[in-house]
Length: 67
Figure 1 (tube, rainbow, N blue to C red):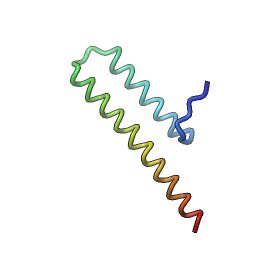
Figure 2 (cartoon, helix red, strand yellow):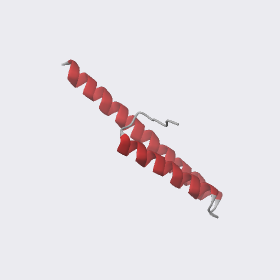
Figure 3 (cartoon, helix red, strand yellow):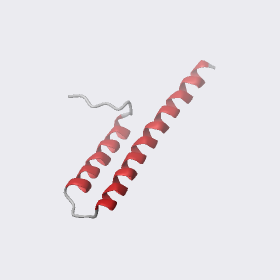
Figure 4 (cartoon, one colour):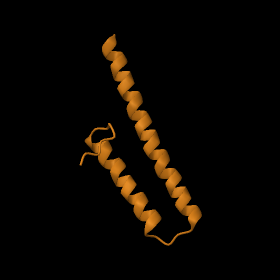
């Protein structure tokens, strides 16, 4: 099974670890629903910003290679 988000190995490992922490925090803890929503929003935001930053870095690298 291959799970590739387009990141290098370190970033991909960190995103997967963040997803596992999110699943554990949401499914197996007895915290209020509002806190679970906050954790979900935080994890989604971090993953989204990581992918956005990685894509911007790849585009910058491509534009520097064209020059």
